[in-house]
Image 1 (cartoon, rainbow, N blue to C red):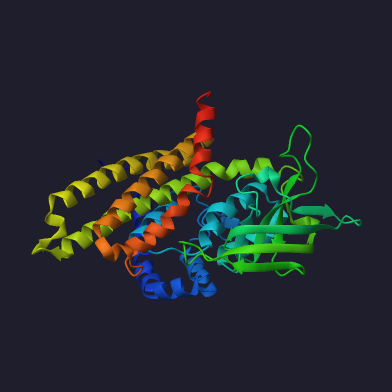
Image 2 (cartoon, rainbow, N blue to C red; image 1 turned 180 degrees about the vertical axis):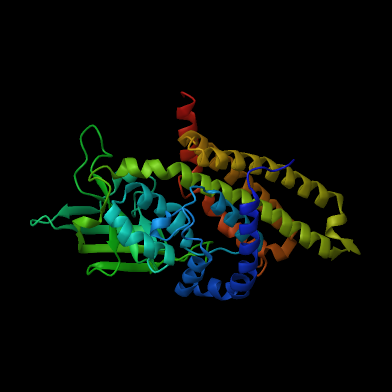
Amino acid sequence: MRRTVFNEDHEAFRATLRDFLQSEVVPHYDDWLHEGEVPREFYKKLAELGLFGIEVPEEYGGAGIDSFKFAAVQYEETARAGVSFGGSGVHVALCLPYLLNLATPEQKQRWLPPFVSGDMMFAIAMTEPGTGSDLAGMSTTAKLSEDGRHYVLNGAKTFITGGVLADRVIVCARTSPPKPDDRRFGISLLVVDTKLPGYSVGRKLDKLGLKTSDTAELAFQDVLVPVEDLLGEENKGFSYLGQNLPQERLGIAFGAYAQAAAAVEFAKRYTQERKVFGQTVASFQNTKFELAACQAEVDAAQAVADRALEALDAGELTAAEAASAKLFCTEVAHRVIDRCLQLHGGYGFINEYPIARLYADNRVNRIYGGTSEVMKMIIAKDMGL
């Protein structure tokens, strides 16, 4: 079926990105996997390519394109190459919407130009040890100082993608206690300078997958955050977090579909080259049937992802629709990647093969951005159940 979600501009961007991946990423990727992060200077190369500024208004140095489709192309091409861009995905996909929607003109002038140039990398800190998906249960506090000039930040966060290399972190903290009838009240967003005294990066977490993404624990001990760095209105942070969730979940859905599509290509290529019992693995009926079944699932996931992408760009993607797309695409990717690894035999368990890394990387898709179980709750509520 003819695909209509991308136009000539997107395909030109795809060609440029594909060349960049082959010259600047693939040759170095094994080293990045060993180091557990991409080099900080690599983010400057991504900035020079224009990846950080696509959706940023021109007055702040960006291209001013209000579309998520270029990000979707990036998901497809990085999956196709079997690589990732480390923690920079959070910089653009998660943090930028908060800055565009909530920052004052003065804040945008301070933060967006270095955001675009890669001189100021952003991360976002929501999750705390022991709270998981229950964001309303966070205990990190930010109390206004007596002179009213600073918030005094205390607490800890965990699972913070990009947390090691970030220059600024959007920290969710309690500026007021919850109300008896509204435990979500009292959360605010602070854009914290990581060089402030009392701010510290703890362990860089050793993860099952996403090895090039620096994921860290953060701690705050009497960090004095200027009141000028409050993002949005005080005590309304929880509602802000909910506003960006459809895009975040669509991004995960699209990335999962792209990983599934890449897995089929990896398995197809491997089985066409690998010979057993005097013939290629691809020539066996079981291989053909397995790959055909996987391709059918990828086709369905692509249709769901494309439809959700169009809805997002049109400003029509609902929370339930985003949850449905995430649930479907991540579950499809789980099944497809597992079956494609099986077709690799023992080599599928060896990390030098992209299917093995993809298997590990994909697992978190059903956890972050809201677990599959949370997605089902959202969908069920929308159904009136």
